[in-house]
Length: 503
Image 1: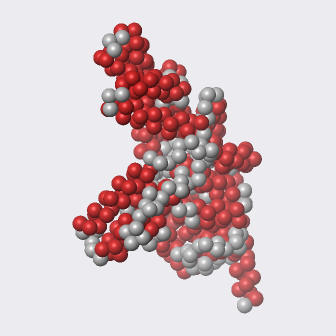
Image 2: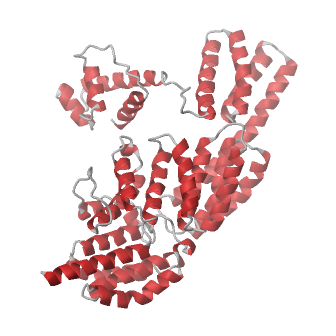
Image 3: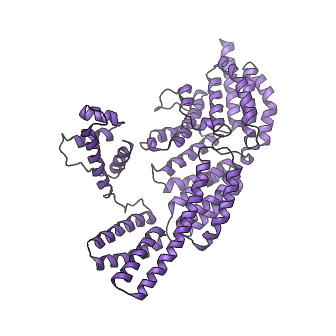
């Protein structure tokens, strides 16, 4: 069902309605409408409504197959020459359409026409670094000139072109495989990983030589991302910023606008700006991403994460709540990978805390936030004990304090102490260790703001001695600067104390 929902949403966005002329009583049209209007969120619901049978029923399975076929045919009607597309995007769609034309003409024995199209197409494929396509075209030309025309000179030219692109393609595949290996190790465990950083350095030494030989889009993109991971995996944001700027400079020199790598490295630069407290520079990076990103794409959602974080770190809490609501309400949010959705649930919990503390306006579109449900909905990062699970624990404690669940908090003290001892003793967790210790002083001080502040002073001093910009921690852990959260919490305790005295 999810695949049909995604294609239908895509077609509607492009104004394509493949069942426009269908009979109003058509089951196919009813199926389309049910998915498009959100009536059918599961196969079970659709099968029951349309045929009163299970998803294994023959009628439903045939209807689903027919709809999928109609949808996939309609995908080819999407306009690849839209104004919002970059020249690279337009070339991508047009070149691959032209290649399909070549294959169809060849299959129909219109070889002269196919050869003419392929010859022109090769120049475009090379211009835009479509290495695999260029290699396929060169292979086709090699066959045509060698077997059909027996033109020795043109055959050897095509063979030389093929070998050039094959070497580039092999280098691109190697870079892609190495980068993917790093990501698989890293993505669901955001604790600082020295081993990943060392492995990235090893891979960089392999791939950097190839980058000097082949300046193609794909190789340079994966190569620069491997180089960047040497620093991001070790949370060295200063070095990562330099690597981002080098990559951006390279891609800005291309003959076309390569938006995807520019988005990636501006995104990573924004992370560095936030961690290094360079908020003006961060806004510049954010503005660029906002200008070129296509709404609803994976990168667009990742950018929204950082824009929300930038808002939180600069104290723009109303803006943060607005970004959160707009993102969660987007019709493509449900298609995100589960680990990405979990990050947004964590941000939602922090914004909910700010609302309870009176620091952000109530969210008109939000339902009732339930702490227990939030904990159950973050199973992936709850396992990341020295990483993002820290943010989950912090916001859970903040919410319990704000909601005055004092007896529950007292029961948590020993468990949190053990957690700090077992998981937060490394250099990359010093700020989190200090802040959790500060929060634990609140219940042990009888929830008195003055005593809590006095007892937590030594940990606050340690926090100040390790500012965020030099802390060796991943950027998702500290959703809101701990110093800022501490001030908000003490203010809430003072308000609660005054309210209790008046009562």
